[in-house]
Length: 182
Image (cartoon, rainbow, N blue to C red; front, top):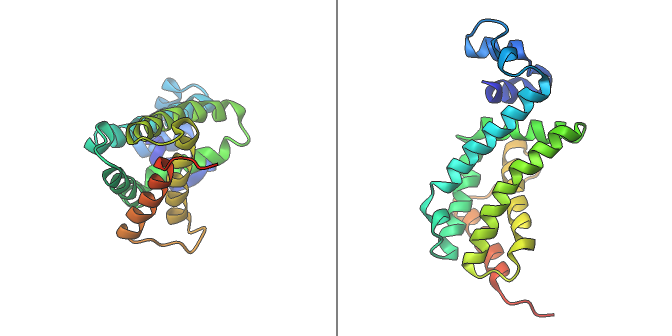
């Protein structure tokens, strides 16, 4: 319920009492399990990461990358899914990300959770023969995340169709797998 509350009411609206109300449990239940605001925020980050990893790990193209085209299709699908059906989760994540700029302890939790995404990207890029997976993985994750953010927040005028998203990821992934010419 913390994720829903955070997505709906923002950081200021995320209180122990609001989570209790959203969950339909007696007042004080949330604070019994998560004594401090930091504990509640940390648990929310951890739950978001768990849900995202399930989305990624259960996909056959991620578990056993067959080719660049399949990985590009999965990435495009994630942008679409996380911008629509997963909208609540993504809004909560962005609220937490912005808050982490003012809370070093929350920032540390988010960085740790984000390592799982970067590790999956690193493994995918390695399996595809990318030229420098450790350097390219954070770029790939940031690119995907930026597209989701743009779709949700409307920060730009970029509205890509499913096919355009897939082609965009294909271009990026082919660029990562080409040998470097210096």
